[in-house]
Image (cartoon, each protein chain N blue to C red):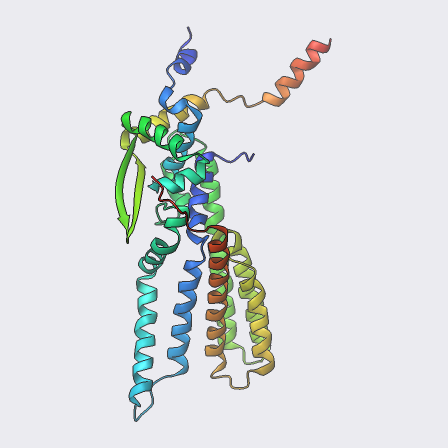
Length: 115
Length: 227
């Protein structure tokens, strides 16, 4: 196996799941967000978001804190240092898969097939 | 689907979310109204207790809304916005600049973040330059048409700000109308600037109030507490 392919084989499976990747992306972009904001941004149900956040928390990627803003209770979620580093590593690995000339290559391949 | 990095998109959405309820413009508008009240009603000698107290309260409240702007907006958001659509960390500085910094070192599309941050900086400088030009024009020009010219220039600045700060059409349309009103009816050139300021405050309050009403109608309070 080439090192490039091996890098893909070691992709973080916790982050690789689409729903968790969405949560990680939002939390990477902001310092912290509450449960309701994440739910609205990602379009998840409460149960779905709770389940994925639980997995991310167990992996040590997300910190979940119950707090108050005025009298309103908030469930604040934020990325840990470990989570931030894991997301950056994941993004680097995924970037390696980018195909810059994908449309033209596909057209060329289609032309060759027609011949 | 856009070609923009999802991280940058999330960052921009969080930035715009801060302005989505209109509370920022509402507080800014109230601050400007208080300032214009202080300017329009300065204390005279011998001082009348009620007028002096009203002037002092307006001045203190104006300073408070300026110095503690973020805290006041946060307090209002805790009562209206967070229970409805949730909380996300406030944009401390320029989130795009922060994103550009945090995305350095081979992580997702740093050049895109830098380009967007530069575009936002250019937009801020352009807005500031336009407002400064309008302000200088109001001071040095002694013709009545200066008000409509200033109104149009500030309206252009607000149009540039519109997308970024969720400004409604009330402000870009209102400033030329305010300028036109002062051009036609302002007779005293000493009181006209404070009237312009008063109109400025009214427009921001109207914009903030309108955005807040739209936000509240679109996002009713959830019946069950989340999480």
